[in-house]
Image (cartoon, rainbow, N blue to C red; front, side):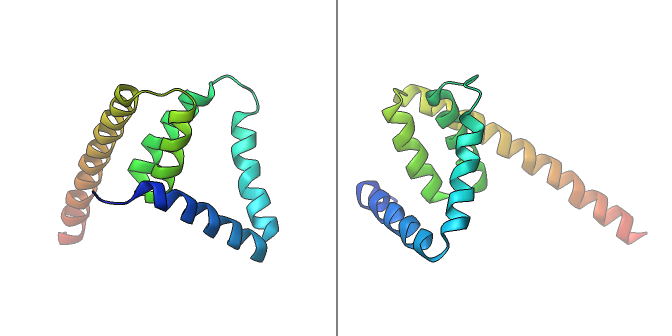
Length: 113
């Protein structure tokens, strides 16, 4: 097991609250981003949380993975839906690695002259 997720989530939430005490305007602005993203209700909560999991995977944010997986479960996401979300994230990251590999070759060719 990589993490004890049931212990990690409360620790994340506590750390988030602690930072909020030090910089309440920043946390308020951060929370407003999520509220603004949900404002038009075009996507349901489960879909937004599945997207958040995929983004968390691609940005390698362990805390985000825990928080958004928990929220997705609470919104009714199944293990199969989360697994499909992960497959999408994996395929996107592979595509990004491919494109950045092309950039590295381009840099080589350009710099070599």
